[in-house]
Image (cartoon, rainbow, N blue to C red; front, side, top):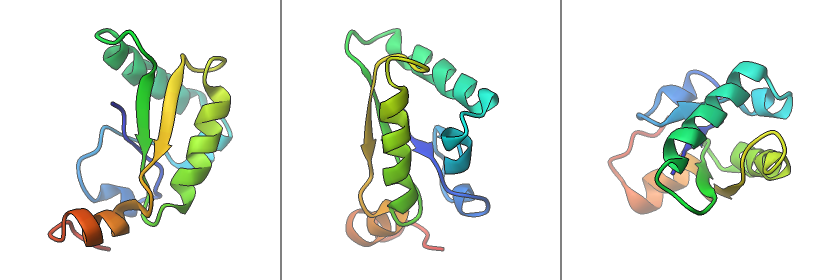
Amino acid sequence: MNLPNVSLPPTREVGELVMNIPLSNLEHCKPEDIALLKEKMREYKRNLQSPVQVYVVCKNGNDSQKAVCVLQKMSGSELDSLEAKDIQGGLMAWAEKIDTKFPQY
């Protein structure tokens, strides 16, 4: 599982996530970020037969919804086959509903 955080600094510094890629970098297909995502997907795909599941998160869930759309368009072309999903409500919903000790910013 991959968990790109599409938040902007300093919000992305909350928690230890697999990778941090700002939404604008995905939207503009920044080569270094696409390469990072491809490498992470290769690492996870070594042990999988099915598409890589990518869970995208941001502060409130808006940017992550956009990122899921971008990733779905890239799936099969720029990126290997993947299943992109949004963490609904973002980190704030996570802090409220799942882990009340999770830092809110």
